Image 1 (cartoon, rainbow, N blue to C red):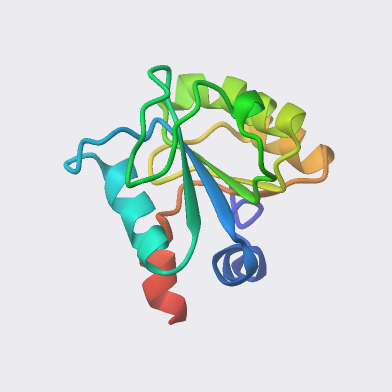
Image 2: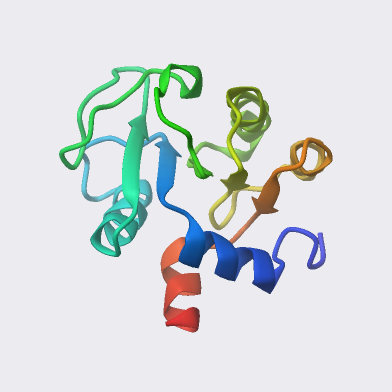
Length: 137
């Protein structure tokens, strides 16, 4: 995979300049990694958009069943699904007009990442936002 999906300039730009993060797989369970990562970014001024089949409200933000249902522009889609499901989510992010996708530690789909890059999205893969935030700030 190399540095293709871990470009430090892209990571810095997404953490510093993005406003809205859609977290696919976000629920109200604070024990899940996705909840912890979303909370951290929300505490640092990012708008969080929960995306899960139940479309439940999480952290005071309304939830949506799919990325296509989100009524506001999304800067970054956090793909908190298993690697085998990540490609479909990345394709949804491209179709929904997201500017970037971020796959956390252990979630890798290089083919889907390349599709996203070809579509003009920034891609970060196998990185945790909280760790990258601490490295930058």
